[in-house]
Image (tube, rainbow, N blue to C red):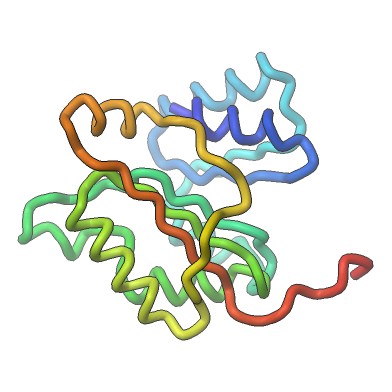
Length: 167
């Protein structure tokens, strides 16, 4: 519903953010938060995140990608529906600028292991110790904690040197 996205944008007014969301009520809720908080650094696209990355974002243009608590599709027969697959890892890595970060969080241990394996196999990514921003708790994290699920934050960075700051 946009609570975390708005909190991150509010905490980092020096950075610009794009939120991709397909859930209409979530988009409406986030738009209301943007207005009430008078955020000028957050835009919302009501569309599938993969399509947004693929068709609307230039290669090597993002400082970070935040993937917080994507649907784990816990049943084995549904794992093919998980967002994090090798194709997504390659797309995300291509959209990150050199030195850009990918921060993923989940409360499903097997999905965390899956994400770690998939992102680690992407040649453009390397493990990192932290992301671009700290993550406020999300409602999915709170639910996971209530259920006793361990929370895992995973970080990678795009290989290559960052361009000079004056460019």
